[in-house]
Length: 231
Image 1 (cartoon, one colour):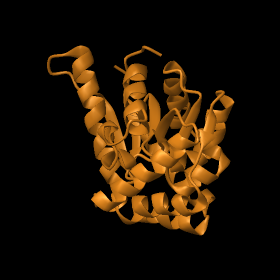
Image 2 (tube, rainbow, N blue to C red):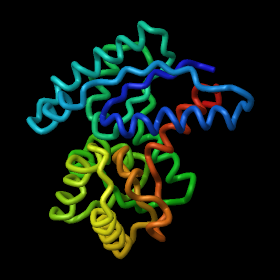
Image 3 (cartoon, helix red, strand yellow):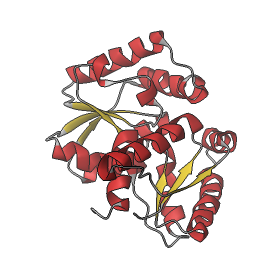
């Protein structure tokens, strides 16, 4: 098994899910007492969130470059950034480390195409939904991407930062998310990407008839496949 380098802490709630999923998948694949070889560098999310809200993306890139370089020195074979939004700075990170980065949007696109999905709803932070760095990976793969209305973008974003990243799970917020998913279904969405690694804490397949593609699970599975030498 290759050693997986996780850049986590954005937020730590979803990083816990990554760690659990990766180890569970390795156990299923190899059996016995097998677990994943992982190096984890967990950043201080307060610093990252402040950079996001101020638009200081280069400063946030510097923080993640430092984390990536530490994992490279520690012996990681490839990197997994345990967040969707911070893939905005993948080019800056990749320019300063020699390790491959397993891109979460590319992993999601591959999964969607494998399931014959052509038109997909995207939920995530406002940066992920409204900016091009994430959507362009999906569009380049031949997918049509639908996002909520501006008002609903604000609702989705608020729930992520004010609740999910703080470990708060609200039934009222779940209902709002389901309502937004249903609206996007009415616009022709064939599936929905949970494009923030915390959304899976709130929304599961049982909550909607639209097929759900949880990027945390997809990313973790791709990491295990790469670590096992499948890719």
